[in-house]
Length: 138
Image (cartoon, rainbow, N blue to C red; front, side, top):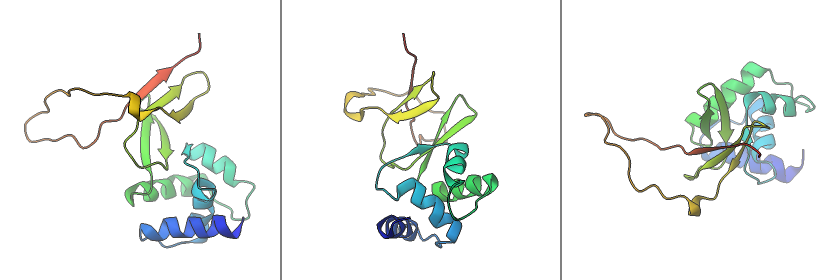
């Protein structure tokens, strides 16, 4: 792990007020250490962590991803109602879900226009609109 990646990860955790435990720093480094945005599943992050110095269980990966989401560092994108991806990019933006590979990628936000939404039930408000565009190759 490079010093810059470690510093970037520790700073990312600090901005959310999360204590930089060894396991959190190890997972944060995989997520944001190179400064790039990521879309990961708990399983893919666990697999990426297996070669690292810090040993992390799959349960810890799930718990840590939930903590990162609750702290406002990541957002969860659910596909098919039961498959969750975790996105380090926090602005509102649409996604492509590639059905043949199971990959989630960013879609161009400047090409999406939502002109209206349905009325919501009384006593509720819209908290967020997720746009996932499912793709399959011809």
